[in-house]
Each structure stands twice: as C-alpha cells, then as structure tokens.
Image (cartoon, rainbow, N blue to C red):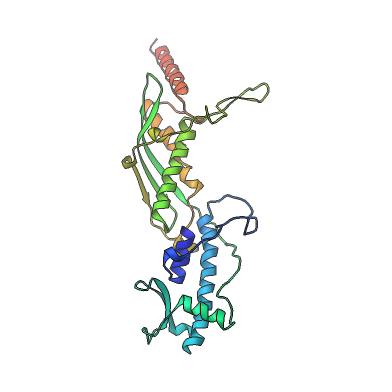
Length: 286
C-alpha cells in the first residue's frame, strides 16, 4: 500500500490504478542481506521512488517529442475528471495527452517501453523513536496485572499511510504486552527439553480482552521529516514494541513499589515478590 502510494505520488496516477505485483519478494528480486533494521519503507519505498522518478523522466522526454517542446516545459499531473495522469505544455494546458496514450504511442512506434530497472543502496539508516506511557492495575490478591490505558508516541518521519502506521503501533503494543506479562516457555535444566508452554494450545498470548479498549489507546506521530527518506519517511517496525516492557515494569513499580528485572511479569512472580516485600517489612518492624 505504501509502495503504491509512492508511485502514485511521483507519477500522478490515481492510487487505485497502481498495481504492485508480488511485492518485495525473493521470487522476483535478489536476496537481501537480512530482514532487520525497520527499513521496508526507507529502503524499499526509497528504491521505488527513485525508479518512479526515472520513469517520470522517460515519460516527459518522450512526451516532449510529441509536443515538440522541452521536457522542462511540460507538466505531469492527475486529471481527476478523467481519472488518469496527463501531460501537457504549461502554456497550453488544454492540449494534453494521457500517460496511457503516450505509453501506447511509444510502443506502437517502436520507440520503446516506458519502464526502468535499477537498484538503490541507501547511504543512511536513520533511527526511529518510540515511547510508551501505560496505566496498570495490580491485583495484590491474585497477582494479576491489567492495562486499562496506554499512550504511544512514535517518530518515523512522514507517515505515508496513517491507518497502517497506527495499526503497526497498536499491533506491536499487543506483542509487547504479551512478552511482558504472558509469554514464557519452560525448559528442563538437566536435558534442555521443552517442559511446557511450547505449543499453540498452552503458549499464552494476549487476546482482545487483555488489551486496553481501543478508545483507551492513544497513538500520536511526532510529524518529523527525514530528508533522506521517501517523502520524508523512515521506518517504525521493530522499534514500535521496544519500550513496552520497560513502560509496564515502571508502571508496576509505581503501583506496588517492586522492581522486576526479567520478563514475563506473571501473577506468580508478583505474588512471590509481594510476600518477600511483606516479610522484609515484618523484619523491619520486629
């Protein structure tokens, strides 16, 4: 979706007319170094924008031969009435051709196909930033922890698709909640075999009931601009969950005065810590 938006913005074609075939996939592209660094938007869409700009240059150059004008005197824009991208001389806007007509003419006259293939290696990998604020409720009788509210602020430069961006932030928060409070596997220390919580039937992950109600999750963007990214954008992927555990642990400390230094913070660990705290208090009073 973001890739299609980048192409539509550069070539001024309606978004719904942009097709992404196979996407960024090793069936059609070479293997990358690795999957890391939150760089789908920054590197992937950066390359797409670069290639789209080259296609735009080819279009304008060929259109210039048809209009008998210079490429810099032509305008590429989206005609909403036609639902198509058009090119016209700035001094004669009514004398236009659609991008489709220009591409067809280039093909029929054997001038060539309006296409471009290249690679782009970004010279930078700017960091993104995320911060979480959570409210927790701790049941001191059962050790259970709930999170009724959360505020999340992210900095990923220009947000190309706000809906998907917010979905990524909230989805990452649910993952962070899971590994902070629920997800744990147990291994036999003698033989290294998985003891329990290793199957889909017993490995605990958060459900919708474990999440704050959607109206109680406030997500905001810092609205910064990354000059080396496509239209000012940079990634947010893995970083979106990086501070969830710390925020939850700090909130628990503020609630019951106990620091936890390992995850997940389960009800059993909370009750044990509360008993130890009470025992120390009793010793102090004695």
